[in-house]
Image (cartoon, rainbow, N blue to C red):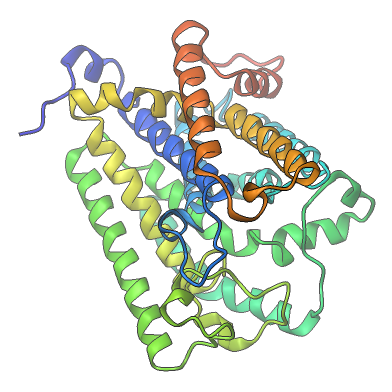
Length: 388
């Protein structure tokens, strides 16, 4: 039988376990995103194992957890850090930071912070809905939004969709459309993740039964979407332009390098933003949240995972460091070409993981909030009384 967390810790607040589970899940999302950015790239016919597990799943997990955190902060401090004013300020700061990082030359990844910032602002009115209403709305969103986005891509091709950066502010309408429709993380579709995250934020993640149900539903969604995708590929219904068979389950979208087709709605691969892809990513996110909540109920796992949980409490700071560090690696690879530029490096990923986890554990132990997290909070509640 699993060893329970000590009573003093469990009784400290009814919200503590929920926040810690979210932090742990966010920590794993960060590690997964770093692995996709740095470790073995998909350069041969077969995708690397890490890519198959984390590709197209880490970023949606972050988006879902953004909704969960939004609900938790609102319920804990509705007039302070969880107010509309404070949340809007943080969202604007996220957009600014994302556009700033995206302006770096030769950046080896697409910065997602601007997308998250917009999603958070759009989510504000939905915090009043019940978990059931949020899940029903998310289901409709998953079914309808990908079709509308696909229609827009087909009707308005060709459209440039690249890195969102500060220079794009010269054409604000184009920037808005890139974030909402044309980009790799179209907010019009990705809002489904936030809706599910808001619903999760209304649940009691300290309950073992709730956590187990989340994990079970998540695992079922992942299995069902992969099985459906495989059947569609085997039946010849999926447009397998690269002729890679089952590997199409993990392949990214053809867009924006090739024109979109209605048949692409049947894809299930990473960041295709189709109904099957979104459902599968929601499933993997729920699975991770449920497992993290269950893991925190076991004393030795709680201690073992402490660095990951600490990293999850300051992901904005660590994500920014990861982007800058990876950008430096890319610049070095351009100046002195080597295997990393083409194949990726598990060594560089592991080095970042060790350094960032140790730094997070020490920072949380001796300082507290991450520096960017602290700054965001201070700016968002400036002149207002807010709980710590």
